[in-house]
Image (cartoon, rainbow, N blue to C red; front, side, top):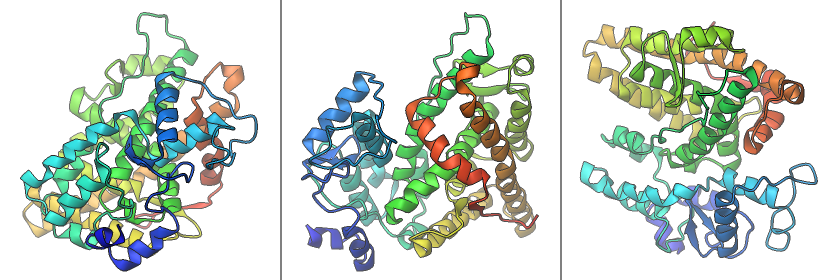
Length: 392
């Protein structure tokens, strides 16, 4: 198996991941893996547990501090921590749909990328290559079809479950938005794990980047849906939750809606293309890092530069002249910088609501609760560094 992996991975990348993701070890409990199940290398026991837990809609609670050890011996002790670990690893019941990557060969991708993507994401076969075997970013820079990959992994439309027939109550709207966030958070994990180059980062870096960027990614995608589907007076949270300006005014988040409307308004003003949006979204995942830096800083820097390069190529599809394309790059990167300010307002409101959840009768789903409790105080305390394109 190491010989097979060496065809697609550099020795340095392969060695660095041996200690993090063993070739035949279950990512969840460390038992021997039986294959790639629901998008992640797991044993049969964790495969069955995840399927039953998700399909049964179980609301597990941890009796400790949500940090229980999940290993081969103790994996049955705390189902809440075991399920959380499944989600964190990127497991999702729709994992088999990732076989659509098999069609990449038709769009002219390099053979190494085609073979490796199929082996990494196929969930029916027994290929047990470590997840680190994603092609290097240098190889991706040579691919003219990176946009095709970004389009293929775009998350599906998610519904909020909001009941529009009921009288509007502040807590009902917030509960629906929280459920929507939880569902979108699962898709963000799946999307980021499929993003070319992301698997080359240390697993701790992957988790940190997702936890620091999820709000930004959600709001940016909200802006795109609104730009694509409705006029300037609306925000398109989901097909079953579209807020008009009048409904925004009656809601408890009117000020936040005004801040978020800036994004689709800028999309409209700049007439942002789908290719530009996809590259910008990838960069937003790479837009905030811990103050102390990342474990795989060099790989991260190279990956970020590659997506900046992809954005410049997407801009050149729209603007041919040097001056016009430079101006467009300036405006698009200014928008990405402004995302930090918008998201900070959302973080403050989110944490405040989380603290007062019981009094406000607002429910926070499990995974969202964990991210808010563990990461938002750190973000708001300035323990992370926003990566800006322009000096303030």
